[in-house]
Image (cartoon, rainbow, N blue to C red; front, top):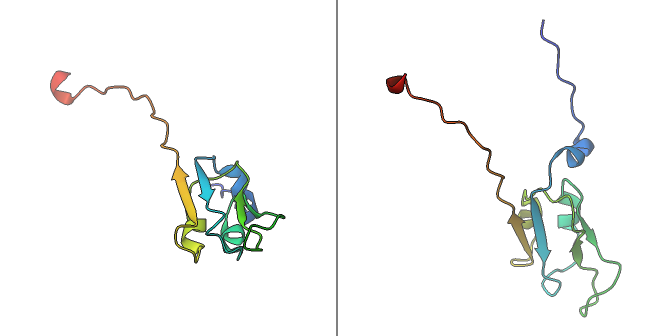
Length: 103
């Protein structure tokens, strides 16, 4: 019988996934609802303790651990407040495999 893979807890996911994105939040558009902060799997967003000119605590990207999943973007009720940037994956060097005709 094959050994069972250990299950990964949901709170451990943020430590496993490699950072491969970043988030930009427009402080003027953010309404401070916190939906993006709560929905972010790697927990790389937070509400600022300072108030913006509108008297709310806007969301802020901490600058690390973003996986580029875009969940914060889809959860945000304010269009244009969140922009997610994904870093393209690094190219893996591949070895050319000869075809059957050249063997």
